[in-house]
Length: 233
Image (cartoon, rainbow, N blue to C red; front, side):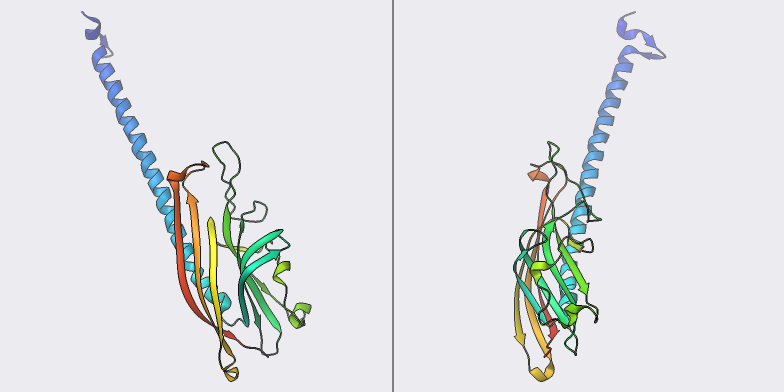
């Protein structure tokens, strides 16, 4: 009997080789399909997350600026980050001209030491990749706080942008721009209108390779808002 006709546990050697080959092909195809499905699922999850964050930006800005006595978007030389930051910030006063709240939106690098949602990304050589988020921070001012009755509001240069109470509005944001205009109404109405157009760009990756341009996804969110503020004297 030839070698191919020899029995191995009820199978000939040829049948055994065919079975092994078929199993390998089927398993390999399954692994490829599973990997593709897993990648598609990650992409879908990340895009949905990006869409949700982009849709929430307008509501966050509108809520923050509603009732604000002053709102400004400009480049600020900030002490806490040691450089220039594009910042949208506002101040709110009550009827007694007491500062009750101020807040700000800005782009900054995510920090492992202070950001609960910190996600470390490494390049293909193991070096950390710099990721930026769009942050928001709101500061409530007590009536007993000296800032409440100060002649000038807190200077944005002194804002603590890297305080642990900052909130991530958009993850992996690469750009933030606002065109803000103010049109005061009749003084008797005690209202001021803010018209703003904003744009937030996101740039997220499906893997951790520093040159994975094929796996990079970019989205730009744009919107316009009309918000009523409050005039104080």
